Length: 167
Image (cartoon, rainbow, N blue to C red; front, side):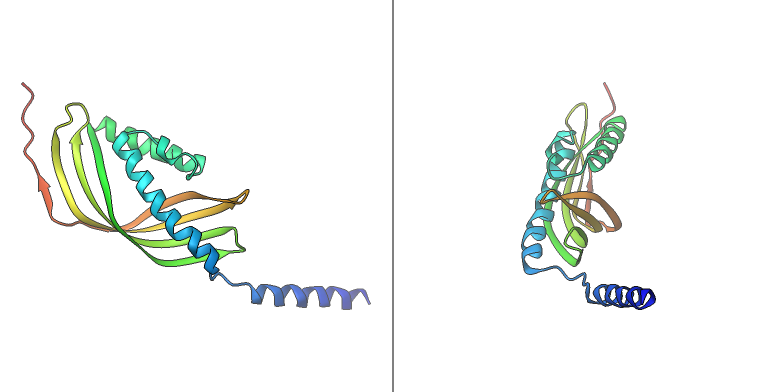
């Protein structure tokens, strides 16, 4: 009898797992699509302000730490970016157990690079195309971005301005 119960439980568990899907519901898609766009706009603001504060409330603590690290690297190199999101296309979206979302995106950016100390424009990258992966987790009813990783880039026409030597 015990073996039958274990077998029945195992069969039911396998059947439930087979029914599980990673296709997002219409409601999940309606929340996640604008959230990803908002996240990217806030990420651009964090880089422009050289402060990860715009990501608070939308990004997990670890994401904010990584943004802080990346911003510190830019500062150390004497650079400040002003990225502008031109377009984002979600190329795939998977949602597991209504709590974990995995998206791949094609992002198009116009980015200007400034000297962090003088504010002088030192370059511009128009219509850079980034292919990214973004993971979100639903915690206490809210979706938070856990990470974003750029998989591949294709840059558009670049405008590099000559930098004047220090006086």
